[in-house]
Image (cartoon, rainbow, N blue to C red):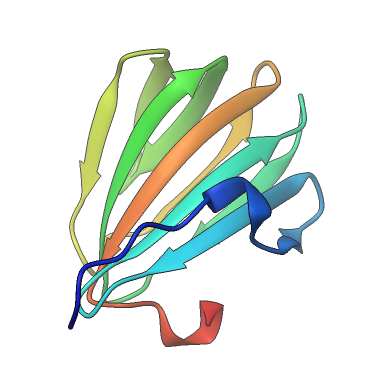
Amino acid sequence: MAEYVQDVWSTEVREIMPGFRGHFVHSEHTTHVFWDVDEGASVPDHSHPHEQIVNMLEGTIELVVDGTSHVLSAGDVLVIEGGQVHGGTACTACKILDVFSPVREEYR
C-alpha cells in the first residue's frame, strides 16, 4: 500500500452508537477511530476478534474489561486483546483514539 496523508477531520463523521461520533481512517492492517464522546454515553459489553488500543486524549472514561474496571484519563493507554469482553461509560466528554488490528471491515 502506498503511503499517503489524510486529513482525518475532513472525513465523514459517523455516530456508531448514541454519543459516540467517530472519524475513521483505514490502512492495510489497522483501523483508527478518532472519537468524540458525550458525557454519560455508554458502550454495552461486547467483544470482537480485533485487538483494540484505547488512547485517551481528553476527558475520563470508565472501561470494564473482563470484569476489571479501568478509569482512564488523558495520556492513558489501554490494550484490549481480541475476544475480551469490554464496555464502559464516559465520566466526562472525551476525545479518544482507538486503534484496531486487523481492520474493522464493518467500519469501512
